Length: 220
Length: 219
Image (cartoon, rainbow over the protein chains, first blue to last red):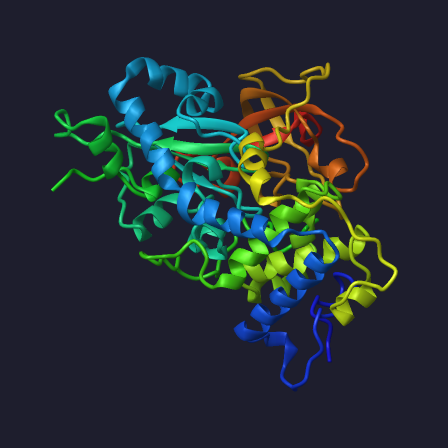
């Protein structure tokens, strides 16, 4: 039996459950992971370190309450209210807090604006830094090796993979989230949306546009 | 550390796998690992930098094989043991030691919204001299610490320019080792794509990184 934590990380650690069967532990089955997590949770609950109801509340928060709709409301407000947009670009954290979005992984927000001349995109090459308060938890592609490795060396190729062709005379700025600053892209408002309400505009804004790997489409 | 996590500029990782209808958590256990990690963080036995380093220390082959939340589980178990919240015997047995005092009070459901809403700002209101000014050319130092750092390999030794001074922030390299916050100025630094990647890169494009005073030298 090999330790659940790979050698070199911490040699004294082992799985929080007793294995009754033999298989290659270099490749834990998903069901094993579920069992290991369950065992760890009950240990921590028994020790008084964790309240299971708090875990439910944390999961509920990011499954149902905090997500890209928050960011979409910020973007739509900036599109309809020039004074708000000015505040948003000058102090992202404060302007986003005006709409009630603040806290964990959104403590220090910077908003970067896409224009006909500049396209911004956000990455975290070192881990998975992402503005939780406005976008929720990051999707798998954002946290995965292909995006993290190539976004900085071949941003235009990555954008093409997302179906976005950026012409040569547009400048691409990649923001690598190496510190605690979290970046939100303010996408360009699509033409033909002059009559839409703020709420209708927010409905057009996608997560991907706010990471900078998509444009906001024109409504059908 | 010069680990596999420092991926900027690597080739061969394959196409981006995009799932159009991706759930927040793919399996219930992923949500539990996420929540356990956040809830255990509220005991303040570690900080965000030590926590990131916990993932970086997963050996490279395992790091690439594991799913995101499997890495989180590995990191959580490591931190619990290293910071003395759980003993090895308890991990193996799955039961608290008979004489272990019951910890109290854990984060409650009622505190979740307030805790998340407050967050944990990383700015520090202490005097610190800004060594660089916006517009100033700077070079990222050629540092190769074996411990945690947020200076990616792909900018070390490269020439950039200060785009903005963010203010004074906790320095991750020392904080991850529990050797103090060492607050210092943090800057947005612009690097031309051609400076980083050579003549094949677009002459217009650039990469911005957030780098601390100690990562930079005058150019």
